[in-house]
Image (cartoon, rainbow, N blue to C red; front, side):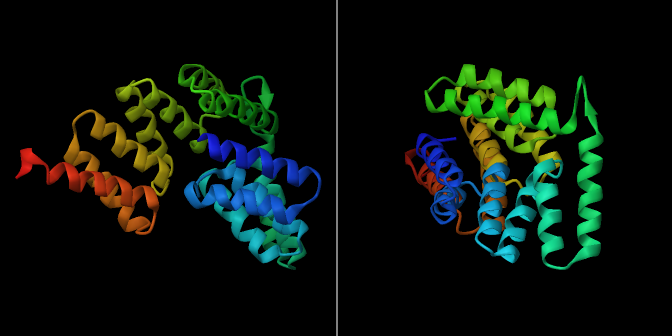
Length: 240
């Protein structure tokens, strides 16, 4: 997470804690403009909308969080509660059952809910290290999070970002391909994969990944920026 986004997250959390849900939502949505794949931010945005009495919009945010991380126990539970509030009782029952299944799964010594909280706590520390410009320390925290919850694709993408920061390109590519195997629509991971390939000299491979992103989200600012970079490279002296 970039420093400005970490600051927005902190402001959003503080606003949420003092029950200023409108301000919190504004901060969370500012992050989601650049990083729509952050499952925890989606979840918090959904909770803000719940408390603001906008359950249909809340459901959209919770659904988006679960598309990134289907095993997100808290998001599954809150989604079930929103469906119940909307009178969609059959869907709510199925959502509660799904949440219960994830809750009862065990990963090592701890139940799923505990490992989810621990993994997110490690990821939060990793974010702080990234903000401080210490990708090595961040990577260690993300790795511990993934040991607990290996299917948390958003954390694996963060781990790959830290590896990129250390120029461990082969490892980053391996992690990003794992993310995309689990969630082919995770655009941030595909953007990062293109960047890692580009840094390795694989311009054509990077272009293929970024073109895929353009089809998925034509207006995404990073997609436009990376494709503009390719255009400059291709139109440079070596390509004239």
